[in-house]
Image (cartoon, rainbow, N blue to C red; front, top):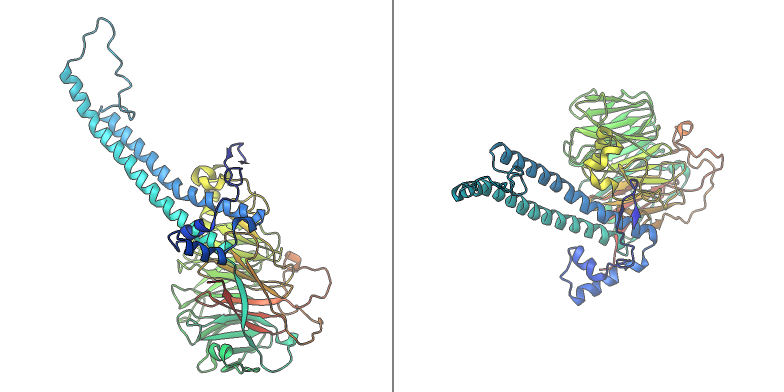
Amino acid sequence: EVTIDDGQRRPSLRSASFNRSFSTGDLVRLGGGGSGRADAAAAVAKSHRVAEELDEAEFEALEENFFDACARAIAPIARNYTKAQVAIANAGGSSGEGSPDGGSTDEASPEEGEPTPPADQDADEDAQRAPVEKRRQGAIAETAAAASQALGQALHAFGRDLSQATRKTTLRTIADVSLGDVHSFGEMICCTGWDRDAEYIATAGISKRLRIFEVDPLINSGAAVHCPVAEMKASAKLSSMTWNPYIKHTVATADYEGVVSLWDVNRGEVGSAFHEHKKRVWSTSWSKLDPTRLVSGSDDGTCRVWSINQRESTAVIQNRANVCCVHFSPVSANVVAFGSADYSIKAYDLRHTLRPLVSLTGHKKAVSYVRWLDGDLIASASTDNTLKLWDVKRGILGAMAGTSQLAVTDPSSALWARSDKSGDVNNPACLRTFSGHVNRKNFVGMSVSEAGHIAVGSEDNTVCVYAKAVPAPIARHSLAVTAAFSNHGAGAGLQSSTAAAGGGGGDGDKPGLFVSSVTWSPSGRMLVAANSCGAVKIMELTAPP
């Protein structure tokens, strides 16, 4: 059992009767991939780790996910059932039809000497109670059906998380992009990206060059040297680059001078540029729902929203600290999230920019990346050496009701006692804290796929992939290159300028190679990664069949 803050206890999957109890057959059924046949179970056993192979932190995280999924499914149904019962009771009381338990509290047995009510009076009372009882039984049946459906959906979602977390996943290099010259820190890649059809990748960095490569020749030609199909020269070092999700020839870049530029890569030139930021722009993001909208975040403490059809920004969000990262919600063209040097993450409705929808705190240094996984979940990375997974709705409810009342509004928030290994004991909106990569000083890149995989770079020159259900990496791959390097000047391009505010490592040592950018392909099966010396690799996420 596990004790929670109010002293209550709940059963634990790690108790004697349930200890590490899921099997390959469970994975087949919960993963939605089979009928439990022996051949299906054997295939799953070959491609997944069994429960005994999970460490304690992984198993506890899966346990929490299970209880959280069930609680989230049942809580709204329980609230609706309670409301229905109250409404039935009120309707019965107002019409004199009796109390909700099936009989009137005022109708005691007749005392001695009082006349017995006639039979027709009893029949009338039974007739009056019948509609109430019918409504009550209807509410019970409706609730049972809704609960069954909700739990089925919750178990299916948990099954996907379980299968993803236990699958024997690997990253393998399928293309090593080389320009033929010796890698140097002057070629540091700050950002990478894919076009909407995964036919091209783009790289940009402190060399002031935006390069476009065709993917198929990179993977299949076997050439030792690769030439970009287009190369454009910018006027300043490039700190951010994002490909428009629908307009194939449009790429947005941002630079160290604060200029946001829209490139037509077919023509190889800038179509328009925005000059309102006063300092370096760290991050840009297109809206998937409205591909004419772009948001940028800057060291000048502002987020600005742009339209490809207008010359001036359409919205401005003022922040007290440097804005290090921005990302549009995948379900709303009016909601953006950003992370900043004050260690916080904020989400805003662009129609009401005076106050954030929610402010999420828990990181101990600057937040270098934020990415929406869906309409409710945000992943964040920080130079405090952690990733965190946040529930935005729970953060909003907690701000409105206070953490002491959050358990009433969202019972799943109080199902378990959190620890630093899982979430944040002081902020129920933090669902999980991930660790296993190294990130104490530089911007190392982070990307999320639609399947829920979180890729992040590391200062040991590796790429780590996390599943959202467990706190440790499920795959890791090195960006090692064969050339000899000098550490002189390493990290100068992507080290946060907010070290005084907690953004840097600041111990005076000269860092080595580190991954500086990672980006999933639209399908989530391939990943492009680059590092601080300009090495670029395309990797594939693989698993046994």
